[in-house]
Image (cartoon, rainbow, N blue to C red; front, side, top):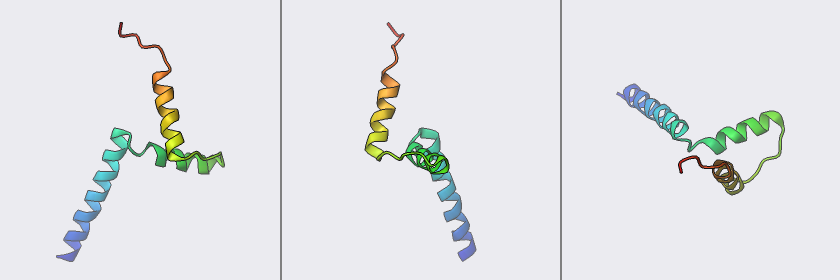
Length: 64
């Protein structure tokens, strides 16, 4: 029975990780891994969020 519970826990963990990737919640962790690989400067999660919002909304909006 323990193996079944371990397998369910593993599947839940993988599903949660994929859900976070899909909705963009894991963007900072992905950025962090890439910056460490490239030996680039790391910014704080708050600075990363502000940069992402600025990048998203600095482009012209074509809806009107």
